[in-house]
Amino acid sequence: MLNRTMLLTLLACPVWLLFAGQAALANEPYRELDRPRAYTPDVKGDARFSDTYRYWKDRSRLDPAMAGNPDEYWKLNWKFMDPPFNQAIHGGHFAMDHGETRFMSLNRTHSFARCLGAGKQGLKGLRAGYPRYVARLGRVAGLEEMIEHCAAKEGVVMQNGSYDNSAVALYIASHSNGMPIRIQVSKGPMRQAFERGRLLYHTRSGRQNFACASCHVHNTGKHLRGNNITTPFGDASHYPVYRTRYELQSLHLRMIECQLDTGAQPLLPGSRAYTDLEVFLTALSNGYPVAVPTERD
Amino acid sequence: MRNLLSFALIGLALVLPAQAQQMAPGFPGDAAVDLGQEKKTLKPRVVPNSGRLEWMPAERDLTSWTTLSHLDQRDARRPQRVTLEEPLAGNPMRGRDIAMAKSRGNCVACHELPGDPWPGTVGNSLLNYQRRGMSDARVYQQIYDARIFNPQTVMPPYGTNNLLNEQELRDLVAYLQNLE
Image: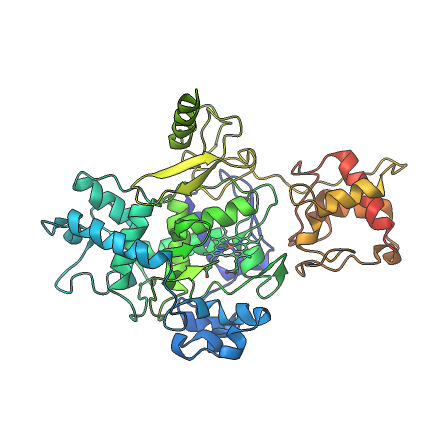
């Protein structure tokens, strides 16, 4: 019987890609893929994607004229909302303070930070190295999943996607501010997760039969009603993010929002599929510095 | 009475996603659903200063289409060829409403149509559609399931996926074929 890994290996091979996007192998449910393509697991890969990276490469040197023109927002990948360009005080700052308080009370014996993988450097750089393979769990996990897991060990409920969880993630991320995202997807379980994530990104689902790629890859820069679709490169570096309408939003909750918007049944935060997508999207931010707290509309 | 009501509402909002036991075979166990709810599909709500994520009923039940879950064993719906029974008998005015309404056709999200200030640019402009000289049957198939013409289309298969019923599709065809 073909298992999923074998299926993905098959799908990943270029010869297979020549045959349109239909995936129909024995024992696997019928799925349609929307024009899968290859990705360089680094933010610079955008040069061969939307070619907007040059505009948002350095957050401290964005073109103010572009930041003042809604037609150009997508070319800046909305980075004008990030510090240092955006110096406004917003809900993200309060969330970060809350996250610090929650972290301190969880970490009285230092076992919480240890559980998250903090070494001699403390929290420094921790965010930049997630998602990662966690041998203890035998799977790849994102930072928010680990916060839930490690908080439970301290006897505290901190569900993935909850305000407290994202607030702690934000506080931890702030110790990586300015540090480039660096996850390895060249071998082992992380490579497999990246490959699964890449294909999921191109897999159609829901009532409208859209894949993430239907919008984010094949219609980058186009108008979708009031929205202009941006490149997926460099997006993972500012999560969790303060959203005017959603308090605090983790990356998995952002995926849920896109799925609900397109009439697709959402999955639970921390599900394997969202974690694979998180690995894929985070790899597209490799080399791009963390910048929190930030906000989006 | 009011207390009782708000109590009940809080209770509703706190319901955690249930496991998929009574769903169609192959429905994934990691989907955000509550089978006790009429619409089943849940959406999350982030509550400030809380360690719990709240869930409430989404706008519509989305459980009958495939998800991205690795555990989802159901087949997606395959492309479907249809024949339009003439006469068309569509109502252009109703068609216009369907094209504009977000919760129905929502064609304007992707296409330019007359009278819409924020046209989408994902799909072709549909201004003066009549000039294309398409047959009703061709337009009907395009909306019912455009994958028949182009397997890579971004156009949702409105008929195959049951997004609109047959009369609504006929109304849309009538509307487009009347755009001068």
